Structure formats: C-alpha cells, structure tokens
Image (cartoon, rainbow, N blue to C red; front, top):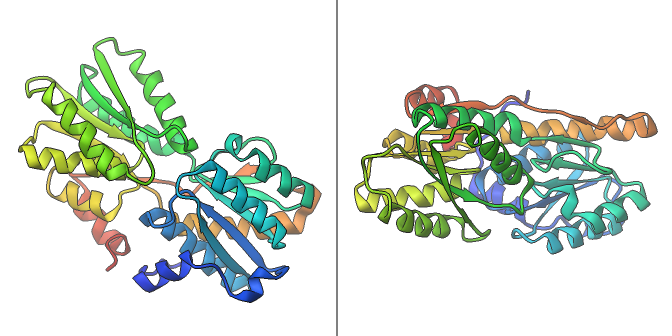
Length: 316
C-alpha cells in the first residue's frame, strides 16, 4: 500500500488539465482516466493515486471530466483510444453506458478497467465496488431505525455504484414492512443543491416523532441534506452517505451525520494502475477480476479515532 500524500489544490488542478503535447501524440505510456466528476474529493484522490503509480512506472496519466454525462464519457474513451492510450479507467460509469467507448477500445486492443463501475462485458478489472461499501451503511441505518421508520433516499441511477447501492437498499427494505422510502434523483453537477432541496420538502412532511433517516449512495447529496437539517434545527434524523469526505467528517463531528463508508480512493487508484501493468504483461492470459481495497465504516462515534489514524482525509 502506498504512502498517501496530502492533496494540495495544485495537485488537483494539475490532474484536471490534459497532459502535455507529447501525450496528445501516440503516447505509448498514457493511461486515460474518465471521471464522472473530477472535482469531487474521492475522484481527485483516485486520480492522484493513479498518477503516482504511473509515475513510478514511467507512464503518464490524463483526466477527462465527463460532468456526469455518459455521452461525454464515451467520447472521452474513444479519444483516449485514438491518442494511443495504454489503458483507460472509467470512473463510476457502468459498462452498460459505455458501449461505443468499450467497442472502440476492444477493436484497438486497449484494456478498460472501472472504479465503482462494476464488471461486465469487456471490462478487464474493477475496484471500488458498491456492495461491500453500501452494506456497511445500510446495516447501520436499519439498526438505527430499528427496522421501523421513514427513509428519504437520494439516488443517482446514472452511476453504477449508486444503482447497485439502491438495489441493495430495496432488497433490505423489502423484508421490513414497517419501512417506507421516498426517492428523489439528484443531478451531477448539482448534488449538494438537490440534496438540500429534497430534504427541505421531505422534512416538511416528516415531523419529529418517528424514526427518520436520509440515505445517499455518496456524501454530496447527504451533505446538502445536512444543511437543511441545520437550517431547520432538526437533530432527530439519521443521515448516511459514502466516501467519508471532509464535509462528511465535519458533519459527523457536529453530530448531524450518522455514518459514511470510507474508501481509500488514493490507494484504489494506485493499485489499479499496478493491475493495469499486470494486464498488459499477461495479455490474452489475463482473467478479468476485482481488485478491491477494503472500506472502513466511519461513524459519529468513531470519527475522532478515524481522523487520528487518517489525517490525510482532512488534508493534514
């Protein structure tokens, strides 16, 4: 496992820029990363980990921000193939939404791996999968509401991680007849704002007195909901996210957020580039597989212990 480094604004900014003119040529050392939202902290951390591993191998990376658009993601994959990329990493986008890009990559013999996008079709490897991460927060939520309460689910079905997480939510709720779920789909960009707006409306019809929870498949919509809770002075609602972003950490410290599953995104990006090296070395002998890095459940009870063990999460 690599030593994680503080992400300065300069590093993040550099990751969002295209690589030098040499990379635009047929660069044999290029690894392309297609991010669903490159400015989100965990997407940026993943890209930074990938860049570090690539540097150690004498390779380069380039990040394209698809801004939540599958069309832009497909175009980015195809562009990386045209540029002669060694491999492409699709970040969060499911293979089912990358048909054109995967077809172009397959025709050119360029392996595509995913982060949080799952494994199907021609995908060579994946990590950051939803199942082990979502299970942590869902188990905690249903324990907190004692299988009897109302849930606001802030969903995002364009991303495979969120889609799978919501399916797990549905499966667990189906065996709990006293649980009701209201769903609202958020946008990227706009997840913070949507989370706040939907929480405001939901809170108006859900006064204190019943077990209440707000759940999101990642932190940003949940943090938006937390802003509504603060404005309304509500401290009776459990709130769950995923990623344990700096904002989520502070919300847990303040008692407004209940739990979030932390993924070491930097390590995931680093390890995936090492996996790509093996994929390229083994060629036709490579068997598609998951290369997961274990997640950690962060709660308002253990948040200080977590920060002490992982100060890099807050940039310290």
